[in-house]
Every structure is written in structure tokens, then in C-alpha cells.
Length: 314
Image 1 (cartoon, one colour):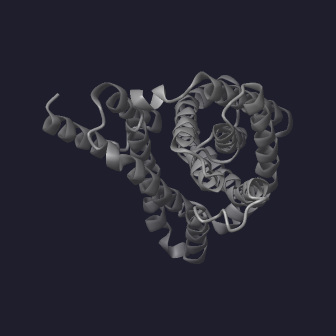
Image 2 (cartoon, helix red, strand yellow; image 1 turned 180 degrees about the vertical axis):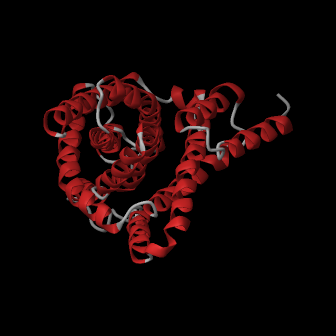
Image 3 (spheres, one colour; image 1 turned 90 degrees about the horizontal axis):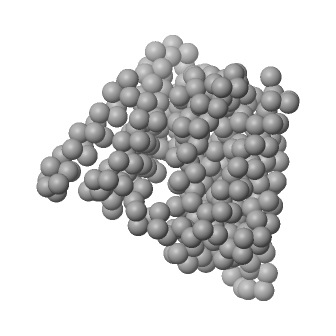
């Protein structure tokens, strides 16, 4: 296809993602078509842009919640997701040995599955001084499983007749990236989206202790800091601040509802850009060992968390 025509078509599709009748699964699927079939004409820019836009949209979702809802759900979410993070991380490190995965790649896959996908990988990688091959392998593995989860989770939730609360807990624990958590939850219902977002952000807070733990283990015999590449997830604080503003200014609720709706639709564009980042080259970097580790770990996490939700969450 002519490069100019391809760029024009890409921009037109990206703009269409803001139409209210297009959903997150559609956005991801159309983006994947560009990445795998047509080719992403803006591949050098969409990765960074999708990450920045995701943070803006998450903050926008905060305008749809009261601070009381955020604090109540977040307080429960910290210990709930904390238990999940520890168990998943431990299981991931064991599976890395079972499948004889290169150490850094194994740790990155385990961290990405346990906490928040690409964000956790990006935070842990500088501490490990991981090579680019290990980082891209872990990122590709997480990307593929995230894409599957976005479609599989809502379908499974409806087949099992999960309530929106049950689905929110399950998705927040078992899906890697924030983008896929909110995408799957938005397809399930407004309550699921609100609760899953807060629980997922609570899970993301575990990045810091995990990074510190890896820094202590890896740098025991070295001098100097290993935390230079770590950037705290400041957008989580802005999400809480948005909820606080909504609670303190009740007269502006119509405006906050507009911001919240815009953020929800913006997530469709985010997933389109993420889908466009998928390429044959990226998939080719995933060897069978790290992918087997990531797949088995994700399946175990999905099944165990679903069983726990069915048994204890009403």
C-alpha cells in the first residue's frame, strides 16, 4: 500500500476509535490488523504515545468515582493483590527454572505477570541490568497474553454468570497490563470497570517493593544504587486526586461525568495503538521457553484466582 495512503488510513482509524459505539476489543483487533497485516506507519511513536495516553485515561476514570469508593476498594485491594503478587512471583521464578529460561528473561516474565505487565518489566529491567533481548522477549510474551485476556475474560465471565464485582476482582488479579484490565472490565460493565481500575492500581503499587527486593538480591555484592532506572507510578496519585476533586466539588458532577466518559472512550484508542505495536518481528523474538513459562504461569494464575473468586467473593 502507498505509504501516504497507509498513514492516512491509520490516522482515520485512530480517530474513529473515539466514536462512542466502538469498544475496547474492536480497538485492539483493528490495531493488530495494522501491526501484523498492513504495517504500523508510526511504529516509532505509537508505543510511547499509548503509554502516556493510558495514564491520562486512568486519571480521567478517577473523576467517575468518589474518594470514599477509591479508599474502600483500595484498602482491600492492597492486601488482596499483595498476596497474589507474592504467590505469582514465586511461582514464576520456579517455572523459570523448570523451563530453563534465561535468568533475566525469567525474572521479567514473572514480574510482568505478577504485577502489571509492561510497566513492571520496564521498572525491574534496569535493576537487573537486563539485556534488550530479555526485555523484548518478556514484553512480547506479556503482550500476546494480554490480547488473549481482553477477549477471553468477558466471555468466560458471562458464561459463568459472574457478577460485576466478581469479574472486577478476577480481572484485576489475573490480567497483566492496566490497559487490558480496564479494557476487559469496560466490556463487562460500569461497576466492573470502576472496581477493577482501583484494584489494578493497588496491585501496581507493589512495583516498588518488588523492585527493591530484586535490587537487594542482585546487588548484594555490589556497591552503589541499582534503582536509577526506576520511576514511581505517579499517575496513581493523580487518579486518587481526581476522585478527591469529584467528592469536594459535587456541583461539578456533570463535567466530571463527561471527563470520565471521555477517558473510557480514550481507552479504546489506547488499545488500538497497543494493537498496532504488534509485529511479526516482535512475535519472532519470543522463544518457546519464556513463552511456555509465561503461558503456564498465566493459566495457573487465571484458574487459581477464578476458583478463589467463585469460592469467596459474592
